[in-house]
Length: 91
Image 1: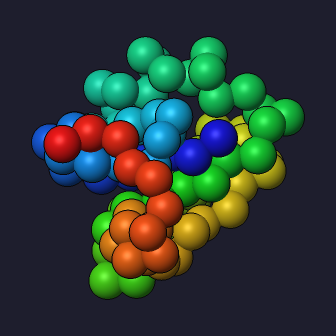
Image 2 (image 1 turned 90 degrees about the vertical axis):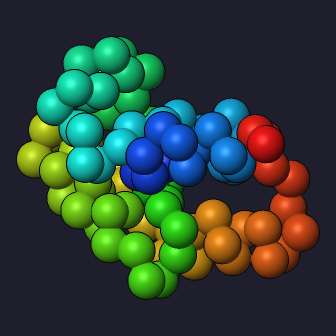
């Protein structure tokens, strides 16, 4: 499952299809709403805007603290996804 660590406004403007929005900067508010969808046995791929953005790495660490083990970080993030011409959802 792809997990977008950007703010909702950024997520709404475009994101990887079927990804889940869990903004790192609003983790405490959003995590209780999505934690049931983040099954601990499922691989999570965390991304943000790209290599200049650190929220994906910070969210990955936070989720590890919550007990999630199968986590990867997509360092190229949404910028690289778009640049590759892959499908996107949102505006």
